[in-house]
Length: 571
Image (cartoon, rainbow, N blue to C red; front, side, top):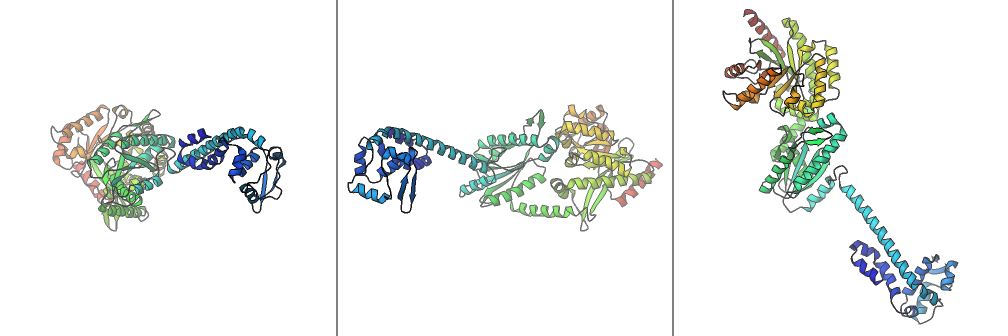
């Protein structure tokens, strides 16, 4: 028994509490004094010991009323030779206290003392095993309740408890969201996306942990990193640099490599909130601002962001009804050939006239992208573009190409090919008059799927072009596999175009690459005669910009086309 008592000292405290009564009850039986003396000196332990032995030997006690023992099963008779017919516990206790004797077969009990010790030890170990199993089960359930099953990261409720625990100490909550994660799901499925989320969680835990950051998963591709630094501290700056650098590496899974970045919004305690709910709300406002600016960046919360967030929500609500109220307009910007100056086509641009005034595209296009409304708007633009193709042919007597920007979300929709087939069948246009402009990032993000889809679109007779070429991460090995008709040089290179400049070298390289692959090159954002002449010397095929014409609404478009036809006829 002494060994048993010593072993309990090494047990967890909660186990000791559970076993203390057991050990205390059986310890007296192991002492080297006679059982008869113990019965005379102590009034309670004999009864406990007797009952323990009786139960251990398979007997049963039936107690009713005031602890009166009604009977002892006959299985106990050979052991105790005592019948308690009607005798109560109190009577037995008084008898022993007065020095009376209880007729027990003590010799038999004495012989069973060492067996009782073994039984007690086995009972204790049995209880320890089950108590330990119970605690393990409770710990497992508690862990599951507080952690995300996919990544093993703590979830939102744990975050709230942690922020509450850190109250009074400076800390910064960073809300991060994986950019373009919906495209990953659309291209490779949920199983691949889950594997990517697990990889991201592991990477975040490793990077943030080095700077005393704790990582939590909220939902989907949204994570929270809780740093014990102020937002304006050098430690926090170093932590963010490490975080963004670590996320630049591609995520590899099942022979696929996916590049993805984090948009981050930060809120600092207590300046930006006194609890987890307020900090999360303000960090989310900062996150939305980061997304609106293109993503892959951190925005710290400010009071102005709340107003912006409210404005964006209101704008989204109004944009939902813009199609129903016929508030969208299609403007076409002409494109000019640099070889002979002729009109070669148009780019279709959507405009939103709200309450009589145009909403800047930079305000509502990002909202449409984030909300998913960009697909419905894109369908509307395609319908109107096809109508304009018919109108232009009726006016000029010849086919003219109209280019339509296709958002990455629209391009990645599973039904995009079927929708294009239905559009061509419904409108009856010449497919060669409709050009689909797809951004470089959308094509390169899921190259294998994009290659197949582009070939299927080309098989329909549609023209295809890569928009904003040179601003993303194109692979030349894949570019030669794309059935592309045209590359569009981004306006950012054209605006800074100077002789012997880096931008000029980039533009010249793009033009050379396009011609090598038998692809035409068009430059957008051309606003001056100098830019036009430099592009012409570099071998660019076509231009688009305010130098030639600003985007035109439908009434203005007809007059422009008629004027161009007269100039061409006069030449």
